[in-house]
Length: 141
Image (cartoon, rainbow, N blue to C red):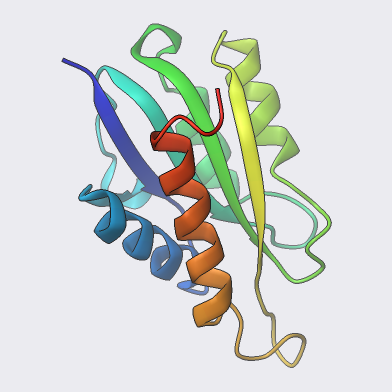
């Protein structure tokens, strides 16, 4: 039986905060990629990560590169970024190259140093949680 999984990569702990909130709502344990979780048969793989200096963390890209394409039915990206303009295009490209469709992505307000301080806040996190719940309830195919 397949299930949903959440992985995250973080430097600032924003992605961890978002992943844990989604995990609580969906009753799924989120895993930091630093713990090298094994991805088993998965319906939806939620990948929570930030944009740092214009791109995803190299360790997230490496982790995604090692995900077996036949184990993941669909991927969903939750991206924390200060500009709220740039998604995880490199992660998307790797997944799609493995035949894993990325069905949607939400950009969640993040912060860096003095820019957008206090984000992601409760509203940002609630938006990400509602997005993830809607995916699992079939609102997005």
